Length: 249
Image (cartoon, rainbow, N blue to C red; front, side, top):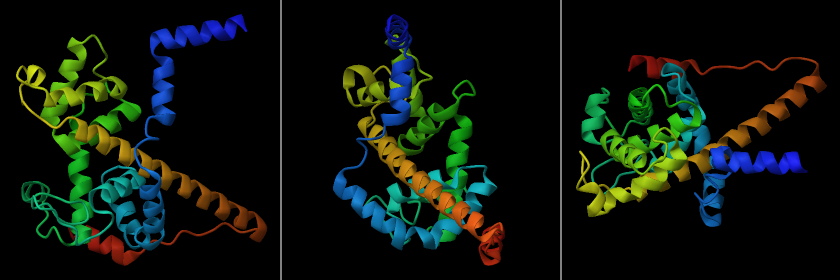
């Protein structure tokens, strides 16, 4: 008991408890019950239509397709005709400038949108400092994808000045909202930002991502059970039309 208590005290002091709490529970407040039910329905009715395209795009840019799926749901609810009053549109809700940057000529084309969103997210991910690894790297890239790399970097500087770790998402997310306060943003390079929005954005995507990944694990277990009963391995078939459509891009 003394050894266990000593471990817990040390873990609390060195931040290990915060780290594992963030890893396993940091996303649980991202989606309410109503939103979760809607998401579950759309996983059945909408996601299958785009799944192969997301897998191909993930393979092209060395990204987890399930994370891309979560991003695209947060952006458009898997609605290829989605658009906002600010002018972003399509499955990945690309701006005109972003679409041009990643070579997308038609933002309403869902295949191009998935490709463009994956390419842009990969570019953002690659800009995150190499010292930041694992989940911290993913979550910071998502925040930068939403609010811009410059604002994320401003938040990391504020985090470090406050005596916290600028390489840990748990610390940076607490300081991102400060970018909306004049006494803080007036001393930053990129100025004002609605810093709470990227925090909520990352939390929601993490929730969607965990559900999609869990569903995938359950499907794999069911297939493995069928394989054992049938005595034969399942063959994975790839849609050649999907591969051809994306390769044209």
